[in-house]
Image (cartoon, rainbow, N blue to C red; front, side):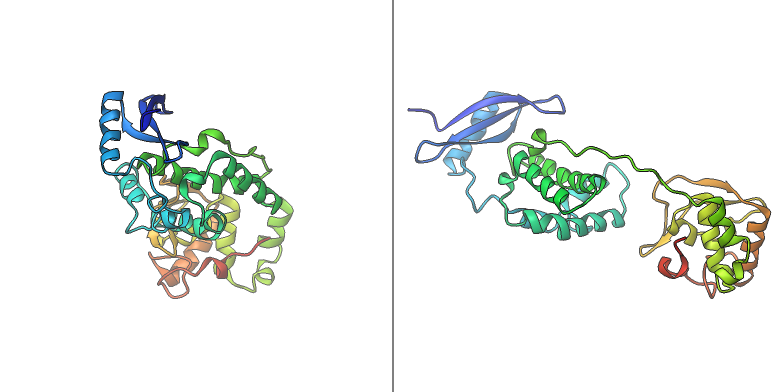
Length: 298
């Protein structure tokens, strides 16, 4: 004979001590563990006794969501409980949430969607990593997926949906370093010096946008977000970006004064004759052009 449940303590990564419990089914099989969310065994025993009286000591299969069910609103900008809590502690953007939602919908749900959340173990995650590798995805890409899934499963533990973080049993892949390629002197000369009118079809706007990106390393959306009011005699002030979410802070939230050559400032001044103090890379002084119609790969 044994009790309906047994308790044990565990020190979680945050350093706190939490009491977990095992329970037994009608055939005497030990199941679990699940967290009680309590710091001592007295409170944990009261918690388990209450669950037992309610017939909820063993989380039923109907109560354990599938990954698809759990993830449905996880990254929803308006409905997500996770995002609502995170917004209290750090500045988030909707683009961050939308990017992760797309990743979940098109990468994680096709593999984990039908699995009950408590069946996504460290071993299951390791098997998924192997599948991603066989599909030819880069380690850095897979590690990005890994990070999103890890965030979601840790939240499931925090909310007592599952009893243990499966990522305690699995690590991300080796971070392969790749050389970042920058434009060479020969490429720059061919694109912007020798005969730029021929290369760019006499399109000063596209030529200047690409030249700024090549010389400064600014992101595409940062270049498109450049306004005439932030162009000075010898530099520009980088303080915003423009994308499908409108004009907003840069990705890093950091503002920069970036020096420019006299020639490049003159080119910007030419474009400002049309666009004034507004978005420089606009055809009519209104909104900027789309990245696809502005940028060209060397």
